[in-house]
Image (cartoon, rainbow over all chains, first blue to last red; front, side, top):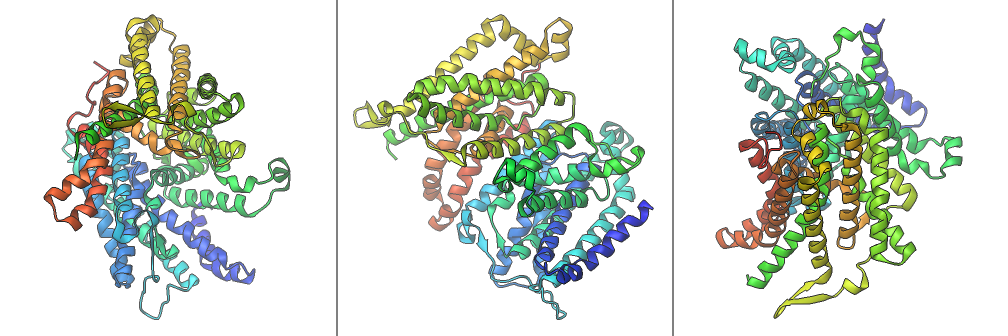
Length: 326
Length: 305
């Protein structure tokens, strides 16, 4: 029964804009796009975190680099998504190559810290890019164009585009995880010394994995830029990297749909707290709705302390879990 | 570029470095002894500043306000350690990062609920004016007080860590936790005390820096990252490393921001220098940290022999 669940969810996702329109809630189509974009970003992080065992605290740098790459191209008048989005993936992949080549030589805590340091560098670089908005950020004149009579300015079209990209990414990354490459990566996570002794160039494998994750992070960034018609340095702030980590942990580290579940739950909770009034809570704390992050924080703390396998872990057989080692 | 300007910026760098040291000292001990990444350290800095602001306006005295805020924050820190952080020592780093990140979110919102987004805290009136250090060189007297307080705390810490029995236990814990426990050191209690002490130092740093920056929600987040840069450069678990690292980071950051753009203009075309000068200045310390990690992964003063 569980096997059919992803298809049911996919069917629901396809029907979602129609249902939302029926209830006069078209705003939620745009919200759905945002959730799926973050799901894409979190899924790419889950590849290195869950399967590769690399605790990167700088994933927002790749998302941000992708967003800025598309944003700058749009401002310069190159609006085609067929150029802008692949360009974002290439820029983020190159950034990941540079960061990974240095960072992956360190281990444990040092890896966490050095990825954080590089992400901070990227953050300050965007802050000082005066020609492209600097601290203020960059307003984009238009959304990217796709051709084929598809208008991305239409929220429904954009939603389905993101949905297609998310599904393709999930399938691709899943194929990757089950390929020979993916098995090597997971084996390195479990015992790097042994893999090295057998003769695998572990550094090269990890670096390639890191670059792939960076590229898909960049794709998420490109979509995010088109979604909000706006890019700014806060996309690269270290708390944003933290939020992506939270999504992966909430959903389940090393589970196929971990990133997706995490994005839905985290953004869903934020949305729910901000838009629906819970009467007894409002009586206790009149403007609690401005403090949605308090709920997120408490939930996260509870998950880390009591359900370290995340939400997907509650439903899976223990043996299939990809247990992460710091 | 006159000598006075250089001296002034050097003093600014020293002042910022010493305040970073107050944060880094607690952080490096927590990291070194319990192998625990505590992102919530910056939240204690924020809570300390907010408490100071309230206590100063209640008591009417800056000094009394600060002196009361330090133990209050220390108590909050110890409660946090006993209720939440203690459960995380045996967990992997990822869990520690996330749980303490959750604590940041919680602390930010709790502060916002109790105080609002920001609080006023002015420089004490007696210290608000500049004094003449050298003929023709004026320097804010409050910044000199910060330097004096920072140096005093560094000396106190040096004395406690190297000359007292508690300090010996702390050093033993930092260099080899299991061995220290096998020798009968009660690491749990020791650690709660160290954590409270670190929280107190956070409050001191928050209170001293607040009149220069601002007391606001999120103030701890950027300085926390700087404190991590410091302890990674200095070597995790080493107080001496934290002091040296703080001074290096404080100096490089302050002096880089002040002089690097002008320096680049000497060598590069102006429009190019204008574009990369500020960027390079703000990423200088991260470059430094990446270089240290690359060539000396254990930091400049490794605590574990």
